[in-house]
Length: 69
Image (cartoon, rainbow, N blue to C red; front, side):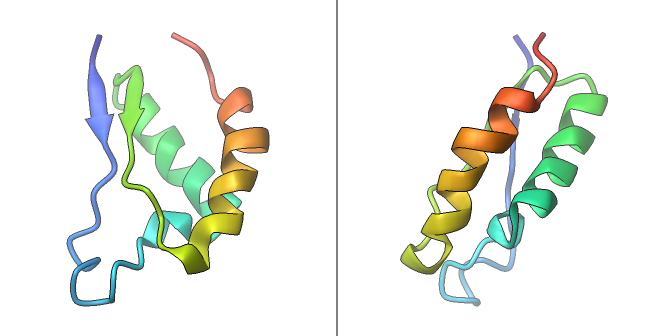
């Protein structure tokens, strides 16, 4: 297994806002880039409340559509 972690260096100064939870499309793009690098697992940080809706959409729509190892 080759896990990749989605990290946002600006999250602390932006109040916990994570760039990859901006939209389901943004998450899919970043996740795709990580998978293209050869990682087969992706670790993410739980979103702040304002990004919860995107998190739920990613969990139901985006994650199942990502390529499986």
